[in-house]
Image 1: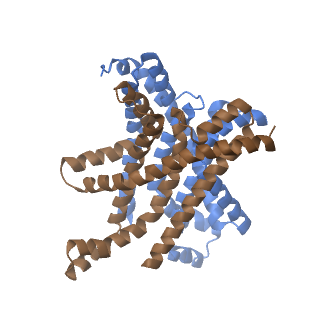
Image 2: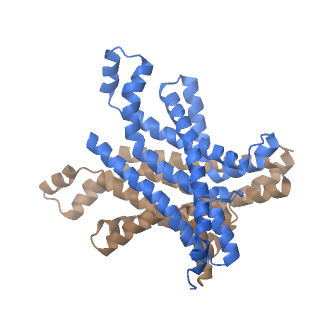
Image 3: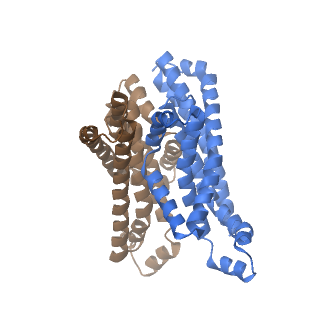
Length: 217
Length: 217
């Protein structure tokens, strides 16, 4: 029976419990990826084996599905004697994949700054530190905010795949509720609304940051 | 860690799964591209109501994870009396989902044409449809080609999700083999390697297109 108010009253708290896990997973992933992606991007810029390895890492994580990475971490590592919980495995796999994407975003941002900006800074007698902190990085930061916002939205949606290794986030909880209640409409409407709310808030936040940075410059 | 024997014995089975993955992605990418182009044209040239409808569609599709939509279709389509075979149901959902992202790519391509191109076409007395056919689309599609290929990679990876709703392709095949052999590490590495070959080939092709687009300008 769709739109049963009694059912919805019981459903909402359960889905919000799941939303907590979803948000936790997404925020942790984004926070770790901001640092990890930067490290990978910096390593990729170097010559020698380190640059080669991080380039290979980026290609591998970007060209294989997250779901396979999840299975590999969850089932593979436990077989290899490193058992991780579902949440931890999800976090590792999400960070592994999205770290590759974030590294590419950093690289793209740095490359998009014209070489003349570097030359102009040097011509003014700036040292490397001053050049980067006052001329280059402010431009890079302004340019990477939109793609980083998109990546955050993509991470929020990706967290739904963690349901495949039985983490109780929104997707898994709605699956369980559908199977026990057969009230498909209400449950999926609820799940869809939660994801829409989370992604909308993220994109609003991204746009606000963009505007604030444009103002600050 | 045990040897890679299980992978060796089941490699043909996995390759057959990869064939199914390719078939699914290949069939889905056609309607996704067509519908994506229609959405992009509607958003650029349509009246206000049409544009609002497209924006609403993009908002919904881009804010909800593909896995939620797939599971929703899995439970809901039988209830609504639409009796599609599972293969076509998931192809439909994937195509509708990716059409939203394709439309963004095409729209960016159309909007990035310099205004002088439009003016020149109009001053030659071209009708709107002729202008689209001979001036706008050939250039816009060339610009959109590299991001289009990245979306195709994402689509191939996304087909792995259909294993969660019970369809047989590479990810499902590898899960079956894992259940039989209890060698998750080896089998999932094998599956990841097959996905990598497909996606990296696409990525190289995308890079080739990108280089050509830069040289062409």
